[in-house]
Image (cartoon, one colour):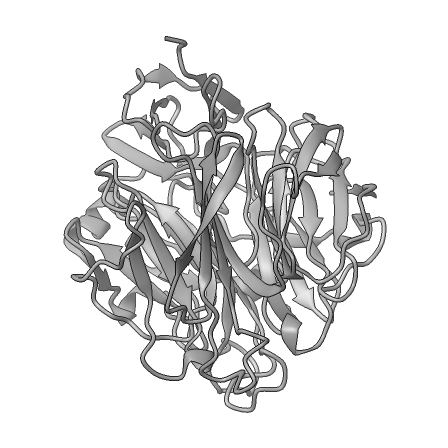
Length: 501
């Protein structure tokens, strides 16, 4: 463990130690939901988490594979059991995942829907209603196998640039091995999309994230790639957004990349990166000049099942950072599951809940927390579903029911949910950084669209604060403008609005 990681952890004003606990609330779903299908749905299975009816409760749009995708409208009461109604949407199959973002800046979340076949853009109308805007917004129609997505607003643009990452080229007669497809990058032309920019070669990307990794005001595109299909020659990629060329100084790391997440866990304001794979789950520490692999002793590799007699390597999919017990220390959830019947990897592979301690090390608490199921998990989300300030858990399973876990951890710390809002273009402030200061410690989170595995969350950023009694926050807006420090209301949702020019 690095010295600065230890210092950052020790400086946290923590609540009393709390062992995480979750209870199974899937009975609150109006109907069971599974991600199903053949080999084209071995991967994918994501969930989009966002508020589609302005009631301050996250709703769910969940991929169904060969079955229909489902919209679940949240009806949970604060602090009570989690419950949903069935939403009414177009029946759509062959969905691998979805990401929420307000593309047209009208204050309603839209959906970028990934499919085996033509992708879709659904415009949000409010009240959890959507209309297909794919043609109106100029998204090209094709018949590819899309498994990754990320987006951002580039300077001077009113609409976001969109990245669609494709997996195996299904039309290649010599496939599927060594038949990875190329990718699509779309920049807006007014309120529609213009020429396709192709990114190639592709290495079977399963997750993508645009982030300002070095906080220099120059976001880059990071791709996590599946070595099972590129077999040789491929690696994790980092590309310049303007030229879509790879950074030549980027060290090549080759793994069976499935998911990606970023968050500052060292306290220096720079985001670390966690990548899942078939084998080691790789945490990379941001040094300010690049990334280095975390020490094994940190406890984040989660390379084999932590109970049972199956000692084969694990297969990680969705990964997400979040403070499960609100002690001010970031924890990690990893969804696990065999691709199908792959004999080289564990079949009974429990999901991970890695809790960070005051020393900066991570310890497995999945079994104690009650969430250590061994179905073939894919997408997931850590989000506060019932408004009590505790992060609940959504897990999408392949050929097994969707899981809803309510966080009932006791003796937790204080918290604040923060939503940055700016006028006109990009109202959700994608690309902004939110900093929270309590005493001598500053936590930082970036507003992004992408990452995870085939699904992501839009909404307030959640900060655990431990036992501190006062905190303040500021926003570094996407154009680099630094907002003022503003006092936070603890244990509540806070909106930080950018002043109009």
